[in-house]
Image (cartoon, rainbow, N blue to C red; front, side, top):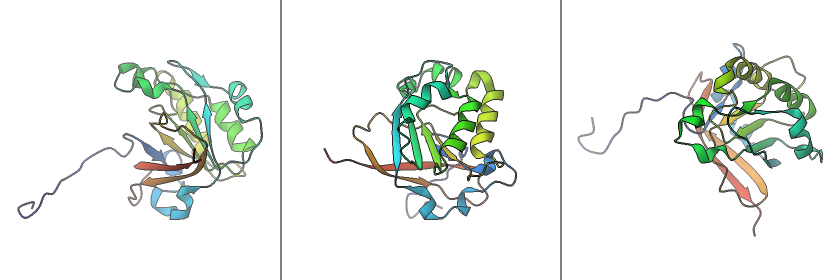
Length: 192
């Protein structure tokens, strides 16, 4: 009741702020947030890549290949576009960059250890082309590949990372039956 202590009541969408998309978000038979074990949210070979983007651009395979060309195995890719600097402006959600579906398809096949991708834009789905965005979501989160679905972290703040990533933990709000959830992301970086 709040009469003996401070107490709050929350009501919020599950895809708000930094959040993770689980396969169930775009796949009826896909896994929900609580069905992942705590170990499934710990990533031991993360990569941060720089991919500067402007409004309404799509991440293409052609531009991404050189950034991942060393073939180093990875279970987590974080894409720093720099677009997070526009948070608070209408352009951030109305003209956000996103993933080309062909890029999502390529990542699923070229990186079999990949379990999660994070990005510093509001969604991997560009507002101005929702059809392509939905298709990219389906490639990342859906079935039909020899590898497990790739979960998505959207609306991240990646600018503070100043050294090589060593480990990443994603800590979602665990709600039964959820297709996604707000999350906290913690990283360990190289000591300088």
